[in-house]
Length: 136
Image (cartoon, rainbow, N blue to C red; front, side):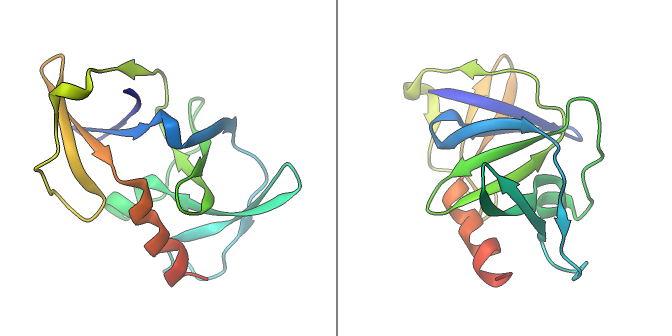
């Protein structure tokens, strides 16, 4: 399985590559006026208007900074959406046999893997639909 690691504070999270359509630089965002919402706004992705979530806002209630390596990941889980992610640098490949699926840290992390001595929390991207539905 290929994963895209996301480093946030002292934790490592990962997106499964098979849900990723494309990784793009930060583009013009039409802001959501409701600052209490997890929906940051919408973007125009190749002529399609997509809802945009912020990974950091979902996990620790802080907006992502626009850094050199901050990107928008276009994801197709149950729905298509964009996800702002800081510190996106590489892709790792792990053996499916070492994934621990009997793990529930939160509603968005259901499995993990030990990789090079670190716990990598694998994000359940289907759970992000709840953020999209509650903000539509």
